[in-house]
Length: 608
Image (cartoon, rainbow, N blue to C red; front, side):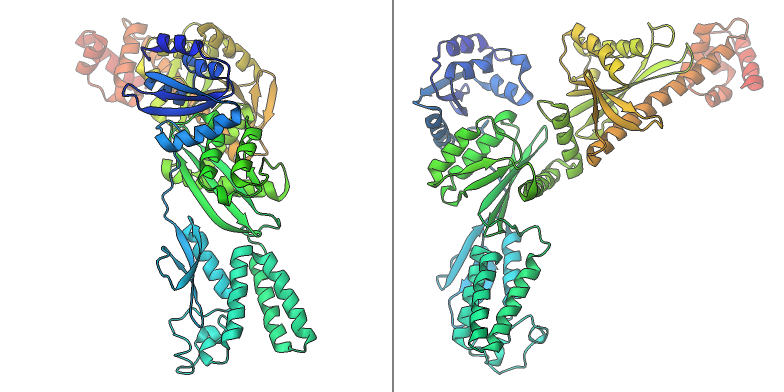
């Protein structure tokens, strides 16, 4: 807990309601966070009041704040512009600091009689023209391979015109993958026209190239230049063939970017896919550490990312989630770009499919970093959205009650961390205070004991989960909700409902049921959790029932009561363990005489 909270509260209460920028500082005076506010007092005081209600990332920031400064501005837009400037100046730890693991890549077009198009990592050759930079080496390499294939450009190491006619044309020429420049039959002017078309294709995409090549083909046909028209027709077909069925090609005629994020408790990953001229020209991935506020992450990312790329801002930016300050971000980006910029969340059609593609890229990139699959990451994010959670759940606890008669009532608790079972966190509960068959009361007892152990500082029950799932319906949820309210604990609580074939069907909330069948990843995760908690609690119930059975059998021996019988069961664990035990071992375990122990041995051999 920050020891200067009282001071910080008093200072923040004196702020005005003007828009502005605030700078959080640590003990050394170093700026660790820069933020903007529509009303400085409201925003800054929120950090220092109700600290326990903050998410883990904000708590971490607040614990490090020693003092703060502020700058009042004329408008919220001015505050956003100043915020971006100060972030670049101070590089604060708790702001989003865009980090990728890539250098820059270029497409090189040599300046010679017969230019070549290739991929390169630098642009130091003055006798060449460069397209780029691209942060995605894959995209640059793919574009080079594609353009060389479509326009049948040579990819060999021959030098033209020096090597004209010195060797027979290679296989690429025979299979129509190269126009055969080495034969000497392609003039410099004709080759230059092909390179011009190739550059246009790289810069403007397939749609513009097809339109211009079609005009040239029709003109050649009218002039009875049928051989030239046929070559142009083949290029058009090659472009169309590449375009068909490829996700990198878009049917939209305008330029746009797609931004999507994948979020985990420790990290977030953001993917930006750039479409220019109807095709992907670049893809960038960024890791974002845990020093960020989840609610502001996307807004801060857009402001920082495009703040250093003002000349590359398109007119339309598709994003995966709504922004609270979308209009402000649009106004800021419009000012940077010099043209109208629209930030929107597509709901259908091609725009939505492009968001899914960016989301998949972000998830795959994040999965490499945290050792989880993209499927697991997406399932947890989908769960958070479906249930209206404020953050993606990292720790999920699930509970089930299993009973067989009055003497074998137990509860099981399983834990999932980042979408996978965390067996070190599993816990077993023997029901102690409930008589009769009452699942609701049993569930209340289990949750009461679990939370009390946490409040008693039992490390085996820390921390509290981000989400609780009960094996049961609305009745179970309402019953356990009372327990959480009694302890003053605010944890999202839902049930897992099964159909008549004992398969997971829906998620139960206080207001009804939420269907999950349409989302395969989420359905699989919920089914796995419900099956696991049922398996775990049933296994414990069967073990308990066996012990009870052995215990009751042993009490038939004169002089062996429930306490001694239970001591023997606990000490030897299994029926086989009892059968193999010696009289001395039994005597020590039950604290009985050797004579009575021999009697117990004889009884076990006859009855077990």
